Length: 151
Length: 151
DNA sequence: GTATAAAGTTAAGCCAGCTTAACTAAAAAG
DNA sequence: CTTTTTAGTTAAGCTGGCTTAACTTTATAC
View 1 (spheres, chains in turn cyan, green, purple, orange):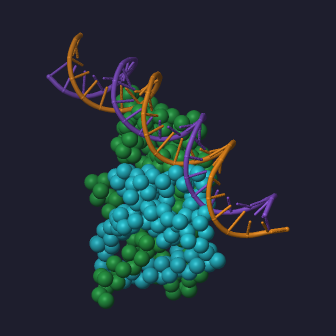
View 2 (tube, helix red, strand yellow):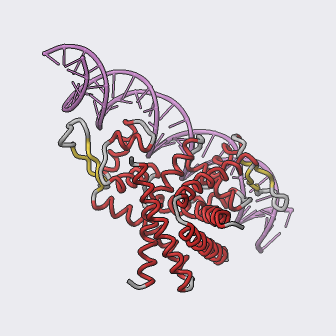
View 3 (spheres, helix red, strand yellow):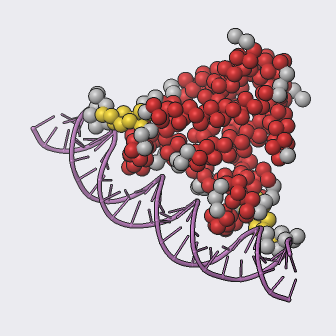
């Protein structure tokens, strides 16, 4: 087996295991906090964007502007989002997370983190350092890639 | 920084990057094939269970039995699931994926796989082997853990 | 400065997925 | 062999998220 085949195999196996897990966990978490997937996705996007407008959200989530507007509305009412006027363009709105909203997303990330954490709990010191190094490599690669996509 | 701290840091960073990505991709994929999240989750569960009953699904997805029954119904009509009578207990139904259903889930896994794949594309040979080894370790750990949970 | 385009909202209506209630049929318990 | 429990379905009704259509307000083009 060549190195490339080896890697492809590892990737495939890993995706197979995690695709199951992560969806399940995510969906349970979202349900447990009483939000819908749509609402959660939206909050997630704002979390990573830090700040964005309605049209950005609608584009990103592949829904119409009214749908985005309404979703934001409910999340503002729920105290998760803040919607303010863009000072540079008074037509536009700036949507940002409130403290409460940010906490929620961070809790969800932490919940996912715990699963991975429990996995490495049983590993030897050597295995841990290999995993640690690999994750560092992958994270960097992901960030590099993100930059390119953002153009 | 100790090894443990190092690992924790790597884990946290990685989760931060992937939690964004994977949800987004998943949601886009599901939308693109014209299914709902609920339907997709259900298919996913059947895929990993190989075969299961309505009550199992309802329990697993945390919805009522009628809801599960109805979801299954639509997916049977869509040609994704097969619903047969359990020979050992004629009250129960055995729900399994059709060929078409299995293909769909495999395509979704493959779609996620492609993202990871594109990440490792730019890595050096040394980095690749580290990543490959780490994924192997993690996959094993996940499988071990799964066994325990299943008791 | 008028016309056009863009950002967002409001309103009306549709559909999917969920729930509860009421039911059928088969198995398990007594 | 009757009673109770279990597995699943059907029906009615609610809600949430989505869409299109119509509108307001601000920015951009000519």
